[in-house]
Length: 103
Image (cartoon, rainbow, N blue to C red; front, side, top):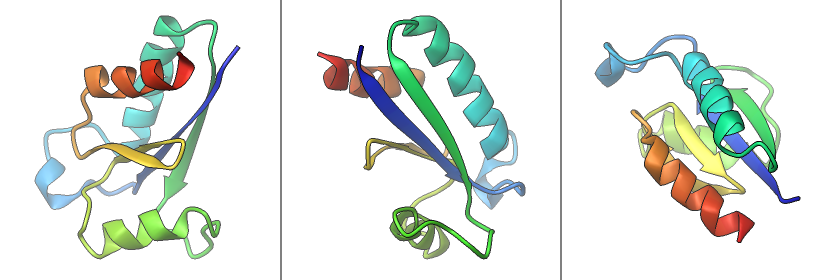
């Protein structure tokens, strides 16, 4: 069984360009449900990182800073330390990365 860590970086408040899209937390919940069904035999670990928290783990800091510096839109989807999607993530792109990792 493979292990894949999926980190979703975001905030409670939607970004200005994301008015009609789900919140970052809703995106995490959607990914958990969709990917859990698609990959029942893969150990998927989902993490939500609030970019507005004062204390952020050292490993998360570069991604949080990149969002705050407007290098990325949120929600930012990172799989095993690689940025896979941002803003309005596409399930197909995320699945392609997971497939690549579990081969």
